[in-house]
Structures are given as structure tokens and as C-alpha cells.
Length: 367
Image 1: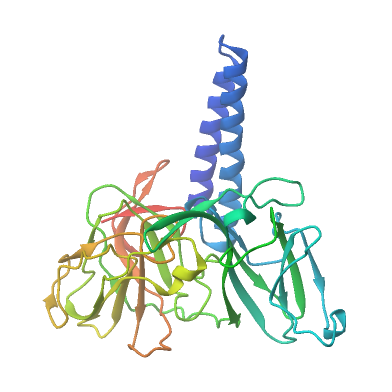
Image 2 (image 1 turned 45 degrees about the vertical axis):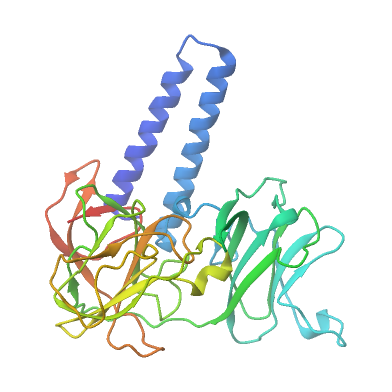
């Protein structure tokens, strides 16, 4: 963990520890005291987990309610893992990528490929909830809103190594049609990025309050493919003004989608604006609010121009803005690193000076 994040972490930990000590010293109803202390200790445990994951995976678990991420096999909530071969299974049957044991209702993800990792995003709905781990602890659900209907669900985002099976969690019953929704892709190691980062952007959100970066470059939550590797997620209230990060021309707009939340089916239902900057880069703003775009394709914009409103459309646990940069508009265009000219808000050191910087998960920024 780097020094600034470590200072911030220590500040938050000490604050919660002081609150716990203060509550213990109160002369009040014992049941109320126990309940308050239990709540504060739960917050402290969540903070510790947030900081561990943020330091290694560049994303904040607390910003993704209902989602549980395992980029490696040592994740603490995984039930178990094992190596597999085709001989492990009935040679006359097709090996499923997702299985549920009919006896103990254990949900497992299976990668029979001997050479390639696979990325699983699997959402569990309906009577299969609640979902529990091996200690019978319940995975907290999130929600997904599809076709105007809000449903509770739990989503697992898991990378499975070649020829491996991962036992994920225990369901409440065997799934029926629609109870499990998945998106499964091949995953390949990404090359080390170039150290030179010539692309510098302005701040993309309007307002004076700092905005929390919930996921940064190479974030293990969703920024794990070349098409979105170099991206940032900034948490913001629904309707926050989204601004042009530089001078350029609007080349693509879409704000017709409405579905939101953590269902794997929402991965391809986002709204977005793309600006071609005068510098030649293409900047894409994703998850914007339904019918909020204020500019047209071909329209010229200046840095700071109001483009639309932020939202939570697509695969989005909370309202946020996803920002990324490419050098072309090709379907297979890779994202590239960029910096943003902004200030960082640090509760220990105060506001830092405005500078061009890479935004990191767990820190808050403003223009």
C-alpha cells in the first residue's frame, strides 16, 4: 500500500477504533451498546478488506454492493479449487462451464481449456438466494433493474485458471430458468504499459465536492481486458454534470438504454458519448443517464462543455462515470493510459495542488 493510501487507511482505522472505545465507555443500555459496537466492528472489518484489495487490485469492494471478486485462487470466500482433466468427467457428456451440485447445491465454475484463463461474471437471482459460503455466511445481495423490474441478485466476478475448477458458493435451491445469468470470456495476460503517457485530460465531472475513484487502471473488478484496461471509475450522484475533458468533436452518442445494476446481462447495455479530441485521442464516457445527452454528433465542444448527466446505466453497482481513451474507433481498439489535471482530496494532508496525475482507486479527486 502506498504512503498516501496508508495514511488515509490509518486515519480511518484510528477514527473507528476511537468510536468503539468511546461507545464502550458509555453508560447506556447494554443491548444498545453491543449493537453499536458490533456495527462499528463490522465497518472496521470492511475497511480492512477494502484497503487490502485496493492495494493489490486497484478497486474498492465497498463500491460494488452485491458483487464478489476473485482474481486469484487465494480469495478468502472461495469454497475450494482443484485441477481437472477431461477424465474427471463422464466422457460421454458435455462438460458445463457452470455447474450446481444437485445434492449440496454447490455452485462451481469450470475451465476445461488447458492453456487459457477464463473470466466468469455470473449473477444469481430468485429462489437461489440467499447464497452462502462454506461458513454458512450469507453473501450480501445487490440489485439489477431490467425491463422496468428491480430484482435482488448476487454477482460473482471470477478469473479461473486453465484446467481448474473453482467452487464458489452454496445456493438455496436448484436454479430455474433465468435464475443464473452469465458472461464468460477468454482472458489473456496483458503486456506492461509504456511509461510515457502523453495524453492529459481535464476533469470530467462538474461540481465542487471530491469524487471517489472506485476503480483505476488494471482494476480487478472489470478493467481486466485490453478494451477497458486503462479506465477509471468515478463515483458520483445520479445526474452529476459530465464535462468535455478537452476541445474536440462529438463522434458518437447513445443514451437510449435504461437497464442498470449488477446483472451480467447488463454488460452490453451501456449509454455513452465519444469525443474525438483535437489531439487525436478518442475519449469515451460510459454509464451516462438515460436521455441526458445535450450535444449532437458532429458538434464541436470546448473543454468544460456540459455533455450529459452521469448515471448508472449498464453494468453499474452504483452511479458512476467510466472514462477511457483509445487511439482509434476500431472495435478491437485497445485503451491507453492517460492522466487527469486535478486535485486530490486527502483527509490527512488536506487538498493537494492541482497536477496531472493517474487516478487511483480509494482516493478522491476534484477539478
